[in-house]
Image (tube, rainbow over all chains, first blue to last red; front, side, top):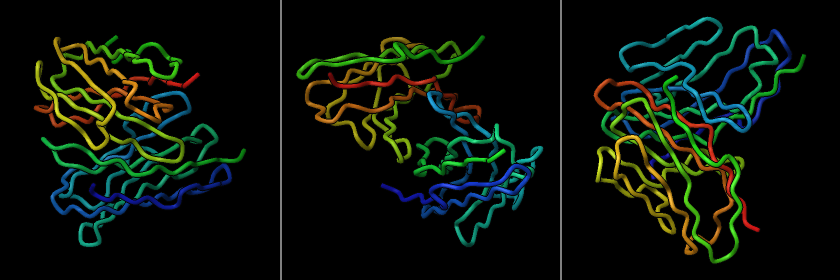
Length: 111
Length: 113
């Protein structure tokens, strides 16, 4: 199975702080790099995604940074809020193929 | 509202029983997927179907079976051959032609009595 690694496994951040989650992959054929957010008892929902032709994408407080040569991409959450407390998954893949989910990062934002 | 409906939300199985988890979508998506999620782990692919009447094994298909008789439905049967079935099961769908990500249901939690 293709390896996708996430770090850290868990993260505790104070309200207003910056949360950073990293994802490393092996398959150079991947061409879509999403982050999903999952709340307890719910299915994952797409948070933000990037394609390999850009190095950074920002949507509100959420930013993806992509390093193609290092085969890594990261999620930055600015001004973290308690409502951001969830598990975050990266799931890189290729269209027409299946996506490979990382093991997840549990984020807790303290009020 | 368009979306994916999984039922039931909680399911209990006795030893030796087969149980079937329902997944219905009204998004008109061709592709559907079943994942298993265990605590502290990511989603692992059980089965997927790119089109009606066709499906493929994923990474952990042993002990599971599926059918895809209708575009909107992709039920998963957890058979007695699955020795460790306790998990959270997630169904997803996707329109492969639109380069859009997968949409997920809210899952079924299966437990063994």
